[in-house]
Length: 337
Image 1 (cartoon, rainbow, N blue to C red):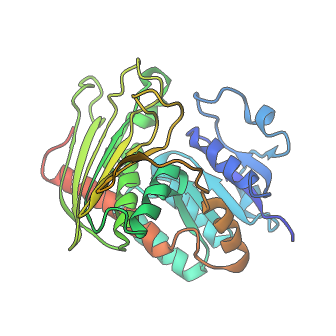
Image 2 (cartoon, rainbow, N blue to C red):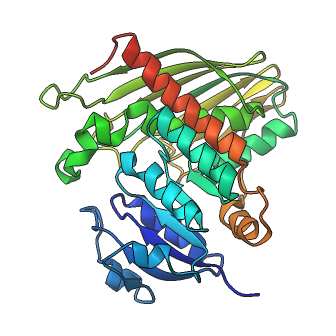
């Protein structure tokens, strides 16, 4: 079968490497890229991906009919317009979160996606987290009864000196809830098995960077469905002493037990990340075993078969909408940077 051919437009965040590697792992061909390389990159794209050619004009990618898919981790506020252009040129689009930064952008993306039938896929939530996928499987099997509550903590390291200027500008990064809060919004839909939820309250603030007006380093959201609630906290306060970029955690409370995820490290000493613990009537156990992340494999199949197995558009767009709605609510209420 002919391999999927893909290109990258927008190299402004190092997440582009993970996107490329996911596709390469499924036998897809990386053929071209364009954009400025972000300061986090250790090696140039030319060194890392010699099989792909660099082009100076993105139109050369848009107009190349042999390219099936375009990846992007560009400036947050510019991703939606790029995705619209990609879809209008008959290609599918895989974008780093946040895939959109305003409700107006989301409305345009939804309209063009429906008109063209192309894929607009946002890399957020469970698609890149083995521990979340494992916990979701435990939930589906009734390991903790009925889900009652999710608490998701998403601390991040700021690495201020290495960040580009746009990262600190509200109109460019879209706000802390729109950006890193989108992961937890998607997780809440994933864990509850729903396509909708209500934003009960939301907060954003600048607590540690008063010299950067408009930047937000703290945010929280309270979500609700008829059966469950969820609390989300995200921040940029991970201290330099932690051996990873953040101690991400998630606790799922059920009617018959609870599950705790330690996404990035186990402070008790076990190596690696994606640790899952289950507490039920039988005791406490660490859930071992590898979990396949099916997103990239399913996306390749979706590109070929015009299906929605990797993540439905309804799920994708609603998760993004929840994060943007929470951001707007927090800022409207005056609790902002």
